[in-house]
Length: 492
Image (tube, rainbow, N blue to C red; front, side, top):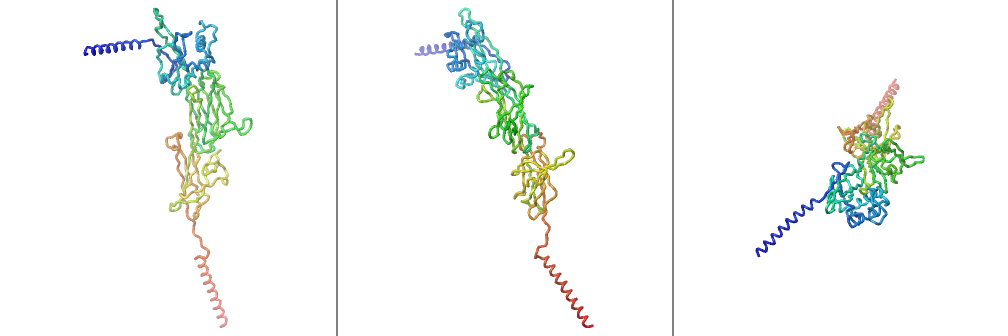
């Protein structure tokens, strides 16, 4: 029995050794590299073999799976796998035994690749996040999807051919490396406004500028390029009359050429979509700088404006960048107190700022809607009066940087109007050149103190009594003098 176990053990050891040797041999099979030019150092690639060698087929090639074949059949509008592959072979090399076969088009091939790479069920079997160069172990066609921060890649394909054959067996012994060039578009997009410090006031007209890159698009059946803009806290400056009434004028510049376009805004006025597909019918404009500008008017205390270039629904229609430009408004308060620092409710103020033009200082008085800025006027009578609450304070918002003055026009009951106007200032935090959030805006708030009214005589009070007593005394003295003078006269 011991000898039996020894024999079995020896056989198992031998089997393991043979398998180990076979594994080493199998691992040394032919390989090839797919080198990708123009790919970033941080780029990664998902890849999938779509066409494989098959000696049982007329062309010697076959689609890797029925699902992949269906994608090609749909794009080529052809039901026979081998006919599709023949067309692709003829496109690659006109001098083949398939002369007379209509060649495939680049567009058909790119459309089919996009269909494959855009199908998540097919891509479930793909090799993920490989780096270039990609090492493969089989001849055929590989579909490749590139991913890199800041760029959108178009679909790529690499054909790996048999390079050498065993002259004895005729079996391929080596594969041919392939070099392809990545087609990619920067997805960085910039959005700026003409207010460099990012602090505005309600009613300010702002010009926005969007800068991006025209994408390189494969020869897909649907070539389009759209830019969508969304805004809150502001309204687009649509035309108010003429042929383009209620439309937004957008200036477009591609490379050195300028265009003018008008677009409709959404019903709620919060967005518009600019269709630039006319500029990507070919790739003549690919990777050129594109700039668009348009205007809007601030309507609230915060403005958020976001632009998105591209579709973004799936990888084959990617986002070519997005950016949000934020604008902020300032706020400032005035607190009213009495002589003993008690807070005073009911003090009314009108707010103004002073502007100097042509050596002349002009006062511009503020209009408010629920204490938010609603406009300016040079007529004080048209200005809005704001009133302190129970805490003696009133706060106004929607303001730009600068100095604001408070003129008291209504004093609290029992107090007199202070004729010395108070002032406050809105500024950026020390060291900041532009606001990145509302916290970067600080206010030096205004304060004002009132005095009580001077006392006046009360009707029926001590003042009346005093005058009455004095009158009675005077009248009594006069009567006494009269009677004394009469008595003296009668004695004489």
